Image (cartoon, rainbow, N blue to C red; front, side):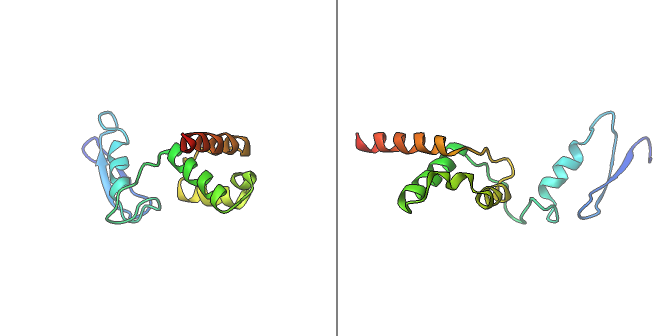
Amino acid sequence: MYDGKHKIVCNYCKHQHFIDLHRSGTSTLLHHSKHCSKTPSSTPGTSARKIDHLIFREIIVVTIVEHDLPYSFVEYIRVREAFHYINPSIEFWYRNTSVVDVLKIFERERN
């Protein structure tokens, strides 16, 4: 503790911060982690991109149709692992949802 402030250290780059836990809490470290080049989820010079899950789902469904894949493709363990690796906050769906999405796209493009 230094002048009533606590020392916190980034686990990745070991950068030290002194914070007043009564005022700022962990926001200082959270802000640092967004810009720290050694944090696993960050890539230097780029910002994290928000992914629209509905658009992502549509891209996958179009891929299923174009490549004649089974609807269960979205339930394959390795495919889900790949999706989760790219975006840990992915909202998984099942084959029945893929069927409904294909029908929606078909109706939309038919009109």
